[in-house]
Image 1 (tube, protein in one colour):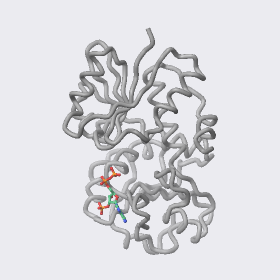
Image 2 (cartoon, helix red, strand yellow; image 1 turned 30 degrees about the vertical axis):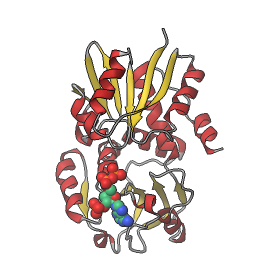
Image 3 (cartoon, rainbow, N blue to C red; image 1 turned 60 degrees about the vertical axis):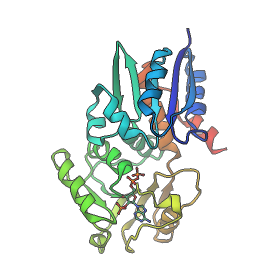
Length: 270
Ligand code: ATR
């Protein structure tokens, strides 16, 4: 029987995950189907239970349920524990295994697709919400020279520093602390691009060889990327590659097969 998978969120109609996983399945010959399931805002657990009782093997979880998925999982990966959020569920032997592939997807896109090696680099991460928290551990595991977190509400960045300091060289603060400092990689994990806003970055934070990465996709050049360009950053990237790579990582968790991502990224860019 064809194995059933789905992405759930609210809203969910515009999710690209069904097309991505359907491409992966076609490419690898895996016998699986992948659909989108709308969960009511007060009915996440119920939606998952229903999917399991219909024989579902796994789910992706998106906004606004990643924290609820973290609560629901009976077994968690280390990276999901630290992210306090789950985007991948696997149902096996009555257990609900929860993982978070967002950070691994980001790191893979940066390393493999953009050819940028994070090791020994000065990394600046903007934002201290769920999106930022989810990528910290995978970035630290790449052994950057340093990871600096800047947030509008500085206290939240300081909290992240305290929580992750055992895992690598990490500091947190406000945007004004960035004056006079330069970074090799700057990642926008704020929700600013959703509102066409620009995080209050001082001039001079982009080294001339810097990669500027916006986790947002589908918006063209965001105010963050335009600012990076005007500041002379060498390379600009949106989050579409991360989206496909986090999906590939989920696919691998479920099926034990790693799909090729570049053809799917190209397909989505069209
Ligand atoms: P997400 O799950 O996308 O991370 P979130 O948890 O609501 O969403 O966090 C949003 C993040 O974007 C926060 O770090 C927020 O900064 P504050 O903590 O100071 O609110 C940041 N953010 C949103 N709009 C921003 C803007 N215009 N400039 C800078 N930071 C912004």
